Image 1: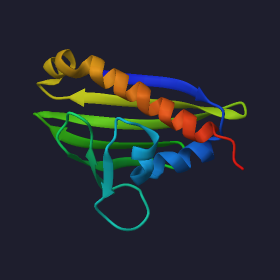
Image 2 (image 1 turned 120 degrees about the vertical axis):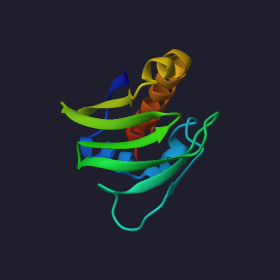
Image 3 (image 1 turned 180 degrees about the vertical axis):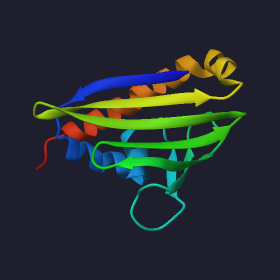
Length: 141
């Protein structure tokens, strides 16, 4: 099961990438994230871990499993018997970029998980991507 949102952003891949990997700033960008706490030091990359608190969810620790600056990263967590893989992909598009956020749910409970939470997750991913769009498209002064 995969849930995705794609949108064009009037900002460069590099600008959106900076927002994407500054995970501790995400609560400023979207109401779907209450807090993000890095659990390690150093640059964000493969093996980096963060504890994320979201509304109506248990806190979850996400671990980066793929890191391809400035275009993509993926991380995963396991909860309620399913593994969730969150993906953040950026593709250059003229003077801007296309931001693709996705969540893949794996495991025996994936079907039930989607039935219970699929629409809420879809709305959350759309809200998060709009947050990146708003933040990246703001004019600098």
